Length: 483
Ligand code: GLU
Image 1 (tube, rainbow, N blue to C red):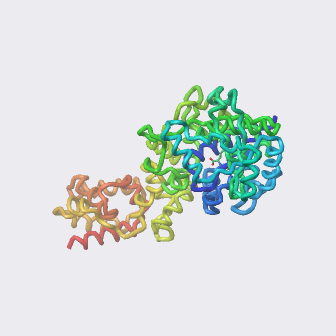
Image 2: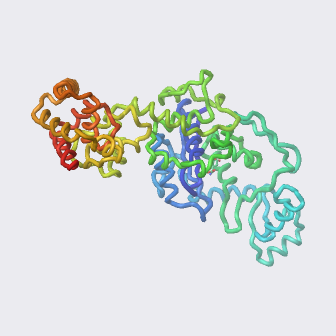
């Protein structure tokens, strides 16, 4: 059996953490088994689906570093042997299958209006019954039906669920889950406004696209018995299902906006690396027996399996995510890091300014940041005019003798060569001896004068990277500022 998985987003918003995890697991499973990974756009909700969401979803998946073998190329076109991959381009296919179900007596017309359905739901709530459709139009007599038709009443189509027995979902993660058929409702498969619905299209597409494993969020587990019955009604074998556990925020409630960023592009904009996201999301509901934490992509592909997926909810942990990002930042070659940091440097207005090569300044600060977005504020003093913090000014520079130290240092360094880490350290320590000053009386004003801050990177290497001209002119400028 050739493994084929799919991710089938409804383009009604951004790609969230849950969807990103579903994409990753489906992708990993396909890659692990040398199969294919398909992307399908489920845009049957014409009111809420937008091109903008399609673009955001595709951009998110690409940013995560995942690819798909078949599916959309952009928000208009698609490619692959089972095209089209946009459901609204497949309506004729669905219509044909609807007719098949109607002919077989497995789907029926429902004339209930929205108001009537609302009222039924309201009554069910009052009477503490589950708010499901009780099958009023399933039981219409021929003459009632004829009367509705004669009156030109609008109708939808509903799938006729069996009313007895149970449907077993043999889920790869949850095991066998049994659903009483009598408790399921007859789902609308074709809307009054003339269009197919998710549950119907999903079954037809997964079958026609030869999907072998449907890996998706557990909010769809409750749809699965109806979908399985539709497969049977159409004479098809259902695929294998695997429903992923829910993702919770740190407070134990379902992960949502109020827990912070939830969309993939927000994580990108906060400065997480795609490889961090892949590794972190892989562990959000899956683990190896050894509880391995850091994985290369090859490692993930080699080890990912559905047996390691947990039934219980996974908790989203930003502290762990940041830790992992810090780990990956330190593993990333500095050239690559600078490329990744470019959008952040650009946004902070640092790109194109004269100053040291970013490779040097970013490497110097690399131990300190966990997010790419932290880089600009750590390196900006190399590129922008010095801004003195109140602490640097009041506690370090405006103390008696500091101004003289700056002027003397400027003099001592103006022709000093080689302007390098070790040589600078030796020279400045000697300077302290010559002037009979404690190192703190020299190092502190020096740092404050050239950076405007009281903390920062290791002093002498920083001076080397700044270069002599910048150091000497900043020493003089700071002295001048002290009046
Ligand atoms: N379009 C559905 C969603 O976005 C996908 C459900 C499925 O994977 O079957 O939730």
